[in-house]
Length: 141
Image (cartoon, rainbow, N blue to C red; front, top):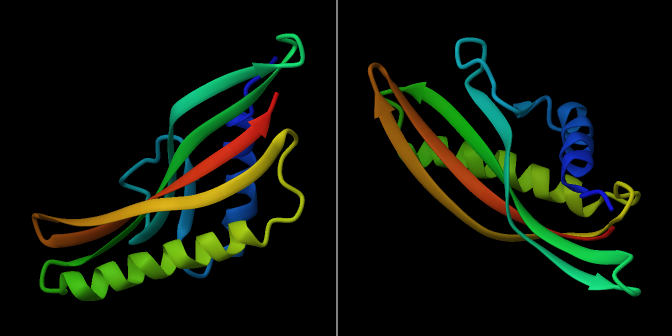
């Protein structure tokens, strides 16, 4: 019995890289911050994994949450409202693409967008707005 998490994240990155290339760079795994552009989508950690064993303990229903994070960086003078609107645009395009995903990775039955949150950070000469979106995944392993 093998978790679907690694295969799901790999397939998600492969699907999104060309699909939202005009809006953001897509990263799965640790990205080099010195090489990242000003608009990125990060495929983040999996959380809340649960297994419900079925079929005489030979199979399990697997569910987990995967965070995706859209980050938009601009000059410190740029307003949070402008940057967060761009970040939500990346998230909205990503969700639309996921909802249109007909052939989900092997074992994955559903991908359900759930809660999201936004925030900002200000550094030396830059302002960042980001949106974290949780994807709830249901699978059979």
